[in-house]
Image (cartoon, rainbow, N blue to C red; front, top):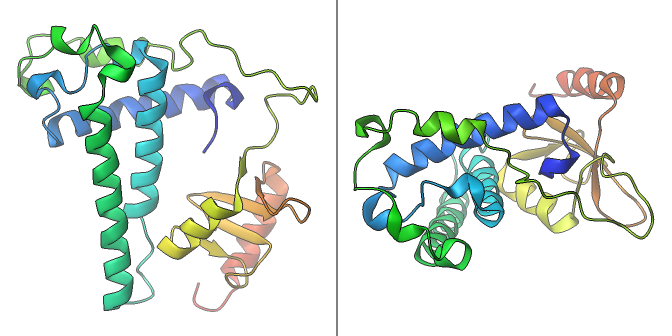
Length: 216
């Protein structure tokens, strides 16, 4: 995942549009207008934005698992199903405790209808026009590191992606280079964390190497 403040303007605009479309789908698929489970003003609450962004990334990692190599075994399918249950539990937890972020807003919006049926046809437009940073600057660091540094993943998150199949090592699961959700990552041998490769040339070389691997 990438922090909003670490994105370029173009990246942030694309990521925000993607989140809004996903939240609109979530709103109707999970009937979040009932009892105003999701306040219409969620783009004005940075905490809700971060919760939804995390749920979106988690769901994409879960439901885009690569199964092209064959049918999942019972154990693998059961593991994915369990992770899906965890996701849904977190979803329910968020919307049953939404007043943690928007105490005075939840009861003032919505009427139990889908977005496409609402008289407020400009609601998604208003969401798209919002700023995901909500005017909040990046956290300061004692080392003076620029917030534009390459994004990082901790070892536990990459291990989870490898287990789910949303990440694949260049030459096996123990590789120091891993492809996940469209990006290449390299292992930081000192910390064990994973650093996103932002150099286009290195990205291209790794793509070419991956294409020559057996099974690709």
